[in-house]
Length: 419
Image 1 (spheres, one colour):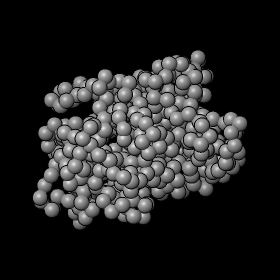
Image 2 (image 1 turned 135 degrees about the vertical axis):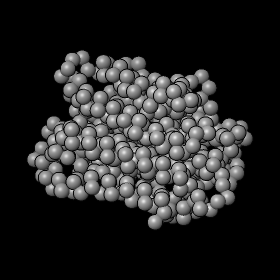
Image 3 (image 1 turned 60 degrees about the vertical axis):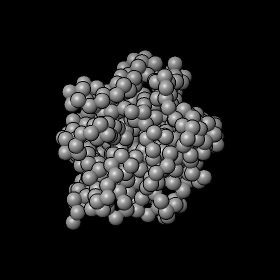
Image 4 (image 1 turned 180 degrees about the vertical axis):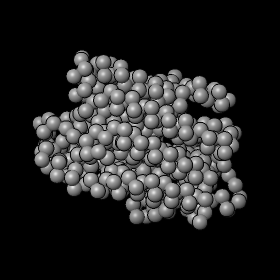
């Protein structure tokens, strides 16, 4: 058994343990949900980095780079929006859960995640067609009306750990807010939306929280700066602790439903494959991904799964869901045709040439870059982020399973059952 395979088995064992607990509670949760008559989320609050950013980076920096130009956004929005993608990203699909009831016609389906007042569970799979607003980037909002459906605090380049940590490690500390900084932004929004303690309690209990993906840049930055993977591996406990601290703080404020994604298989990233070229075939797995990089991601995810289980035990009235982004992308890369992708899942759609269409001197969105004719056939959009098609597959797997433990659309009522 290879090191990569063994480490993934460790992660799988942790996930299966949690899944077994969820399965044992499934019938009970479903019965409780039927007795309550349904549930819904009034809004979504999201934290993270460029995987989740939908416009904060554009407003935070004076020179945002290629993401401010076509072909970013062209597939769906027909213009750049600040999403590091050709179209919609994961929160745009998850956000369909958070739209409040209105006069729009919607389909009643199985309810979502947490104990809520006795109202029907509403999931609008046609949010875009009905003209419902996408989640507002924090830096684009000014009033409570702007954040009525929630807010997105994610910003490109964000890390879980703060700047001081990286300064002490002699690593470029960046200049975008860390996860803790985003939680501070969130508190600013709560002061707009809730005028007293009861209002805050209601706000927190009726909202869905997506914390991540976050932590990827905590490893990307030192690795790309020349740190060894052995040294960067020692950061894992601190990165996971920072994520845990943010989740625990949200719970302390009253959050009842939190989704926490793990890291992606970074060894399958065209950016990593370009940054760390090698002729040693032993460095690659059967799909062409870098073993050592994926092993780092698996170690992070394994530690995160263990920590989330600890949080569940300490807060039995809160639904804490692990979203397995790693397995979602590994499956896409290993079997691209099954989801309608082309036969080169490790090649970026948009870039400046090279074996993986990644050129750090000619990045996507700049004058000499080119984009593939069919982004829907590509898994990677620009070497580090995914295409709209890939994000939709990942989101569907998180919402319906199998890439979340427990899956969001089948877990209403888990909060409060003791999981």
